[in-house]
Image (cartoon, rainbow, N blue to C red; front, side, top):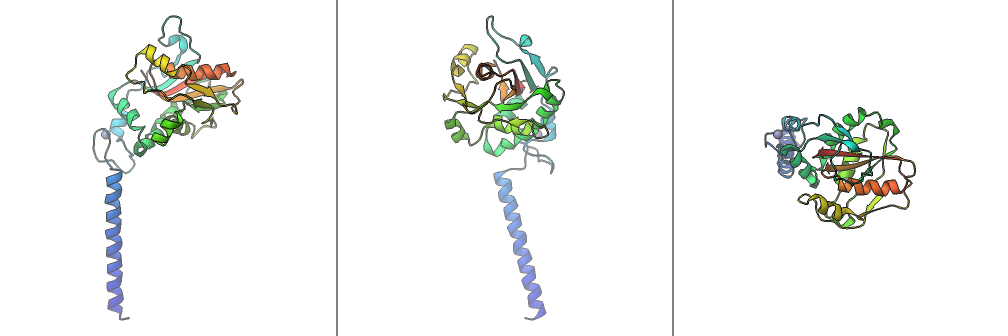
Length: 245
Ligand SMILES: [Zn+2]
């Protein structure tokens, strides 16, 4: 083959490779747009899903850990957990991010939330006594619909730098409950009472547990999960969430 023909073929191959790469990049950009989901500005290479500016606009809680005595509750209401640790106050930015966390294409948001959870956990004197993290489970039907449990992703991301196990199947959701976002306190309580049970294979006796969920509103879901764990002999149960309202 003459030398000039080989060079031309090389150029054609390089051109096709570049065209294929460019097409692939545009396709990926279409599926996973490199724009911040909140402000729609173009993301920098180290940013993912949300830009640094929007992320930093979330409002950290001044006191991340509150004991149950410091939490609001109705007279006579019994808290089964020992305290609530959370990252952010309720704000529009955090609310939107937690909402996006429930979509598979944005589920990577669990990573930065988990990273911040690790930071707040590191400041707690009880951290060393923790035996495991247990995510608040989804009902199997909702798990099939969503494809993943965002609380499990948060727990996994939170323990990434810690030597703590995640017991994903220790609690089982036995009732398909309605979303609670617009419910009042009493409705939430009715909605979750009896909605969980313990996996018979889980040994909770004398264990110190961190229960993980995305949002702490009235605490009714956490409280019901904590009740199951305490009835099974758990020593300490602490709630860990992204938001505490
Ligand atoms: Zn942004």
